[in-house]
Amino acid sequence: MDLLILGGTAFLGRAVAAAALAQGHQVTCASRGSAPIAPGATLVRLDRDTDSLAAVSDHRWDAVVDVSRQPGQVRAAVRELDTAHRVFVSTGNVYADHATPGTSEDAPLLPASTGDVLPPDADGLAYGSAKVACEEAVREGRSTATVVRAGLIGGPGDVTGRVGYYPWRFAHPTGDDVLVPPDPTFPVAVIDVDDLAGWIVTAAQQRLDGTYDATGPTTDLATVLDAARRVAGSSAVARPVPAEVLADAGVEPFMGTPSLPLWIPDPDWRGFMTKTSRRARRDGLVTRPLEHTLERTLAWEEGRDAPRACGLTDAQERQLREVLDARGVR
Ligand SMILES: NC(=O)c1ccc[n+]([C@@H]2O[C@H](COP(=O)([O-])OP(=O)(O)OC[C@H]3O[C@@H](n4cnc5c(N)ncnc54)[C@H](OP(=O)(O)O)[C@@H]3O)[C@@H](O)[C@H]2O)c1
Image (tube, rainbow, N blue to C red):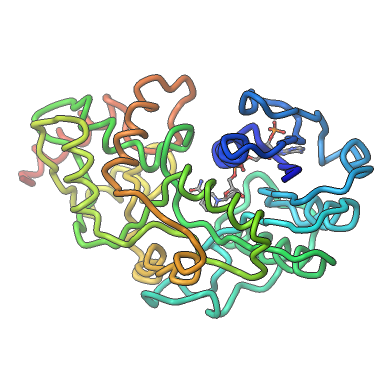
């Protein structure tokens, strides 16, 4: 295939490029070039906020992969690029209901946003609505299209650190225990970046025409924490922190600094990571064991050079432990 990736300098886009190259495809990445692309791919530098797509529009592509969250950018790509197939990377945030467990691709969506631009400080709802608008634009194009609603992605290159935090924290404890969320039964699903990337290449090659949830198998937080402890080879024990202590200390759930990731206390979000992805698995998605993803993520975390966008720093974890001890919470 002659594959164009709109992106390719970040986590998933770069993994898609690497997976396609490993299978012998030709890969062009179009982006501002803010980080290196996979070796063997060609970079076309362009800024989708200000430039036209002229540098990549005088060519017939076999497939175009787009990871954008900006409806205006996606509409322009659909209008201007000549391709046999498109893969659009969307998100599970497009759904309106995150309370019900085990829903499928037919579940109701958020309303599509109407603007062209998703502001950088947009919340999860605005992000989901923007992705719905992007999905609509892609489906209105002339080519076949795979819409991939990705779940939480883990693996090397995840700058957010949501999946890497606990393996890293167990590898670098600040005491005899690691502070973790209060609910070990919270449903968690992680898809490995390379499993998702590999399947995106398959979807492009087979021109899968449809919408797919693409998530890892659902397990619970306790299982993830056990696996994180094992891959870190740690003797520290997980110490759950009551929700009210976290709230008092300003520790956010899931994301942010400080936070404890992989947990959302709001019951309306309990089903967020419970998609079955049955359709994608039927059409070729294969996911590796969680432990392998955590192992690879930890290896990457050990050399990370950008700050993590979640978790507790050493000082924050020590401070929170002091609060627990002072309150007599074991
Ligand atoms: N991470 C998760 O757990 C998760 C979960 C669900 C869904 N997703 C979805 O998965 C995708 C993640 O993809 P990713 O990791 O490759 O993407 P990303 O981190 O969102 O990076 C965006 C890519 O687009 C390029 N880009 C951004 N602004 C641009 C502009 N103005 N002009 C040209 N290029 C621009 C960036 O390159 P330059 O900066 O070099 O221009 C980069 O390569 C996203 O669609 C996200 O919504 C992620």
